[in-house]
Length: 394
Picture (spheres, rainbow, N blue to C red):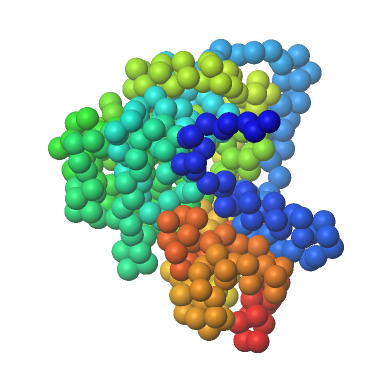
């Protein structure tokens, strides 16, 4: 018997980051010494006071369902977080707690998009955005940026991409995979364009908000363009800034009508996020934020070290990041030096020759690049650079 699978699966590809990490794991199980720089998660343990809150929740048997949209305690903690960190005022009814920021983004796409709609995705992009749009039966419209523009699009590019079918714009700042972050002035310029198109919703994914070190303070789109607040969905989560990737806890805040629609969808998929994770997230958001600042400082130190090392490699052209734990060098010259026809082939060469697992830029809509995660110890990063140096000079 042949099982007939849904046609929608033909629109998407398996996540490149997941696939490469899985292959690296198989090589490691086979005895290879593999350095995995393909994973997008902090290498730090979850801070102790957050784990303690989870243990306390278990001790008081707080293990039952919460409301689909999250516990009142966590939704109130999210409201306070937005006011404290971003100058944004929401009510608990404007907040949805999900099983990761990824689910919040997916819920939004399903709630907003229909066949014939378009969603603007800025490239380089996180690998899942275009496929989320496709799974919602809509068409992703890719707007490209390069190193010359600091991996950020202009207001003119955004205007040119908008059509009568545009329903959604997805903004990710700081950005995975480039580490680029939009300034207040740049966000204001994009907002000026969107102001002229009242039917477009803005999804701003700010999951890397706390891993940021530019001279100017982090800017949230809804705070900069407050007159667009009523059609902006701000997505965030616990995975990156609080080293809680496996806890699977994200949240979104925006218009009540959209939050209600996303909640309805979630009620028929995952229902509520893990009760224990929600209890831990309350402690994370409401507690001392020094742990967040300490992790960010360490990521910045690693960034500076790794950027210097990548720039010393033959054929690698790398611009600095202002956030996240990624660098995204252009390796077109390096590919020519090693006879690699594509960045995918180049990744394969590097993995086989050096045991360093990376993600090709093609996965992010930017062929000719590689994504390096520096969410690893300084010792590990130094070893990876030494292996790459030997590979490029062989």
